[in-house]
Image (cartoon, rainbow, N blue to C red; front, top):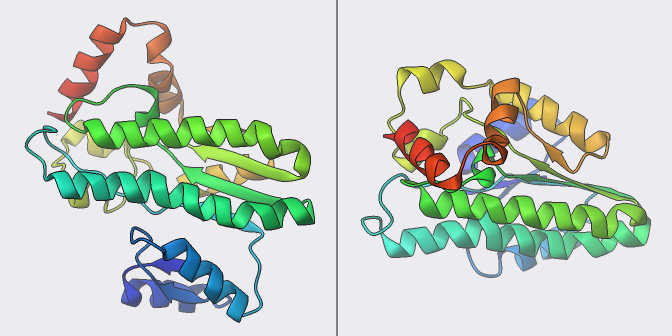
Length: 222
C-alpha cells in the first residue's frame, strides 16, 4: 500500500510496481491514521512492514517562517509517524513478526540554525526509533531509523533550500539510500547512516564543541 497526497504520482508508482495499491491521503491531517486503518480493514489487509517516509522541511529563520506551516511540519514529521506506528505495532507484536523503518536524517545528530524545527523533528524520530528498537526487539519486531544525508529528491525544492554546488555533488541517489535502509532493517540494526561522509558528520558532536558545531551547520546551508 502506497499512501501520499498526490494521486497522479502515487498511481503511476503503483502501476510501475504492479503489486501495490495507492491510497490518496494527507497523513498530516487529524484522523489520518484511523482512516488508513479502516481502509486496511475494509480490504482485509494487515501491515507486515511500515515505512514512515512522509515529511518535509522548511528553510529559513524560525521567526520568519510561517508558524502554522512549522506546526504542520511537526505534526507530519513526528505526530503522524507516532500515530501510524502506534496503530500498526500491536498487530505486529501479536503476530510476533514485523518491521518499521522510520526516515530520520543526519540532521538528527545536531542542531540546525536555518532549519531549526526540521532538525528538531528528526532528532525526535531518531530518539523515538531507538527506544522502540529496544522495547519491541524481543517481540519479533525490527525497528530501524534511517538517517540519510543530502539525497536527490524534491526535498530541497519544497523546503525552499537553494543548495549549492558542493551540496549537489555529495547528494546520494534515492535508490541507493532506499537499498541501504532496507538492508539495515532486514539485519535488525537500530540506526543506519548511508555513506562514509554522512557517518563522519553524524559523529561530529563527539569531537567538536556544540557551539562550533552549531555555527558550522548554519554556515553550510547559507
